Image 1 (cartoon, rainbow, N blue to C red):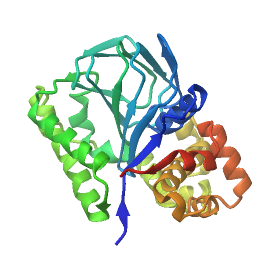
Image 2: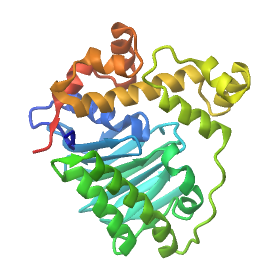
Image 3: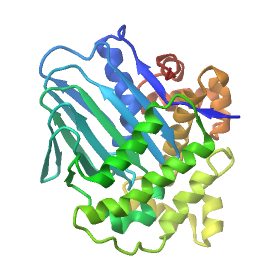
Image 4: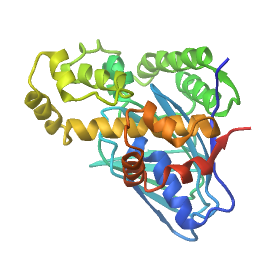
Length: 315
């Protein structure tokens, strides 16, 4: 039986520079590239937990006990990020909006654009990333929650965070366990929306762009997959597809590469020593190992081999 495990990352031996690179490589797919500013000291000894499923990613990071500011670029994905500080207050800035939260409150923000997170006392930060394809059918529901601090005492929120905590901390999980828990996680979103005063709205039908993104995700392991395959499936020209991606500030090739790298990172962390880097690269659609290594390092600022060494199954 295949078992899924959360992963521990970091160690007491990490230097400040190593900790910053590792933290950035873990969180970049959730919130985009980030920079960390500390009021005092450094990030030496950073540790945390990470868990990933194609429909949900979770992370807990233990930062030093010092005033902390994280500036995030945004992932470019039209998904949603959930943020929670534990043990101290938190302020989240998104464009002109400023959301103040106390310990345990959860703030919903769009993953696509940049934001700034301030923890006056540093410490623990919990993050969840709900990717675009998973939230599409919940879009109307989630709109009522965006850019708000949902109180920790809210019962549906308590249930939702309990499911996330189970996934992030339980040592061994079967694929069936994971599918059930992720499904229940999303089932609580309409209840949460109603609890904070927003009526759940009817989700809009899937857009062409959503179909294209879903097709890309389904074919990530196919090294020969190209924009021509998408054009054939959608009965439009490759140029029309490029224009659609251009409106979102990217290109088809860049989107395909980033999704392959995201999947490779998750697979490499989950597989540990059971799979070589070459096997992971091949399964994620890379036909050239050197190109994979260069692209991975450019994206995550860390070599695949170094990332594998810094993560291990949670005991």
